[in-house]
Length: 111
Image (cartoon, rainbow, N blue to C red; front, side):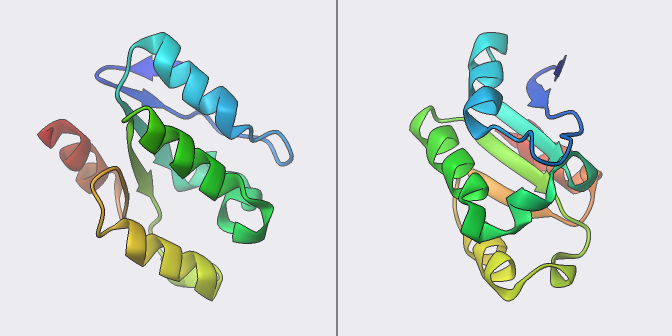
């Protein structure tokens, strides 16, 4: 995993290897209080809410006050539950989704 100051950037995650705790640990160890995740870096399990991967990541990031910006160009290609999750997340302070990287970086940089 690589550090892109002042946020941590999630590298591509092969299917079946996404570990929310490892992502949170990497953020903490890097000293970062923000995480940038591009759509292509996320495994399918993240978008399938029944796996619990997205929920575990959000819970851990919130607990450690780490902000996350996810780049998801078209949420409509994912399930209705994920679309609802993304819409709800965008109302919060810690975790948001953006249609492009520029908007995600701008949000992370604003705080």
